[in-house]
Amino acid sequence: MNGGPSGFNNAPVTRTFIIASALFTIFFGIQGRSIKLGLSYQDVIVKLRFLKLVMSVFAFSSTPELMFGLFLLYYFRVFERQIGSNKYSVFILFSIITSLLFEVLAIALLKDPAANLVTSGPYGLLFASFVPFFFDIPVSTRFRVFGLRFSDKSFIYLAGLQLLLSSWRRSILPGICGILAGSLYRLNVFGIRKAKLPEFISSFFSRLSLPSVGNPPAAPNRDVRGNMPSFMSRQVERNYPSVPTATEPPEDSIATLVSMGFDRNSARQALVQARNDVNIATNILLESQSH
Image (cartoon, rainbow, N blue to C red; front, side, top):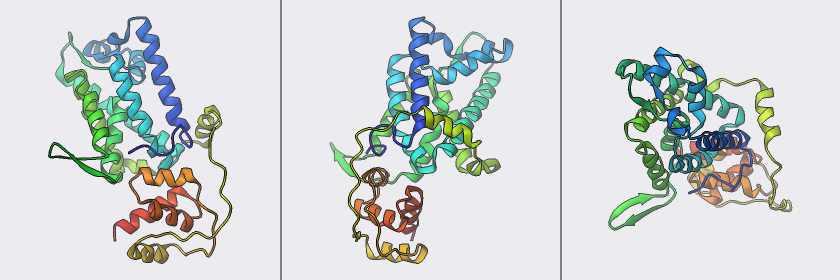
């Protein structure tokens, strides 16, 4: 299972966040300050080190955490492609701020002035992303290893488990806070899922992204006839008027839907019905599965 087409096509916010996280981690690692970025009672309650609070959101405290963290951030770019860069930016801000509030509350309740209670890194965003991953990304492949059942989603869960246990209590606490933040977002607290940032912010990230390379040339126009199961086709036709002819859906769009676990032919047919709009095609497929 992957996050769709390789690279950062249609994921400029993810690209910027990954680069920032990597640069901050390398910078503080060279200075030997990575381990000191974790939050403690003294930092949050006594001395109010706001700058350290902000830096702890981006920089990981060790190389293994950086590798697993960047891998998960790169995979979760599928959500930016699904909901758009603007709403994904809102998801990032909500996840980070809410998880930080939970962390500060936990640190205040534990009241251990000597301990570094919370490790650094974007744990809030990462583990908040596991909530939509669990509920919204379907399983596409199942297999057995030594009698144990696995799916293509298992590798993502294992990477998350490794990150969660990387610093034991110091990483478990922000991981739990991230899951709580992701759950609140899914519950649409304060109508957060409908919120949007000013358009110039999302366009700023788009300007930062490099031009995509290696995209396959557009296929010639032709009538597309998918092999969607009959019950799914009826549902699609009922909710979305069919079009007699359409251009062949872009391979990137098909791959994005396939990465979410949908059948390739069903994904192509849904894109035709949605006039190659990935978001509408996703809704078509999810509605068809729910019936």
